[in-house]
Length: 112
Image (cartoon, rainbow, N blue to C red; front, side):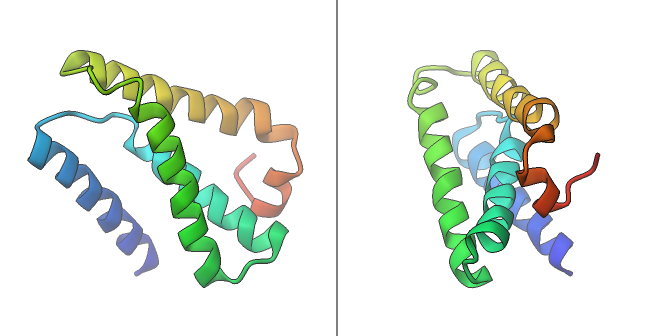
């Protein structure tokens, strides 16, 4: 049930972006990954309760969205898709290659 609710949230966000603006975002999963890892780290390392960690993680993900969105404001079509895909690649690279050796992955319990 929880996994399907997370997938529904991601699909609704992507539907709003694609349906209302007609633009394609290939980095949607990267923002979900930032929010989920932030929530897990805030709940385990910082010790915030779950219901406080989730809104804080949403704010962290929204901040990343603003940092990516401001340079991409004038991009359309294929160029926006390439920029969002590049952001997804950066987040994947950070998650799997750079942060793999850090302590964060030991408490979050990510795949090795």
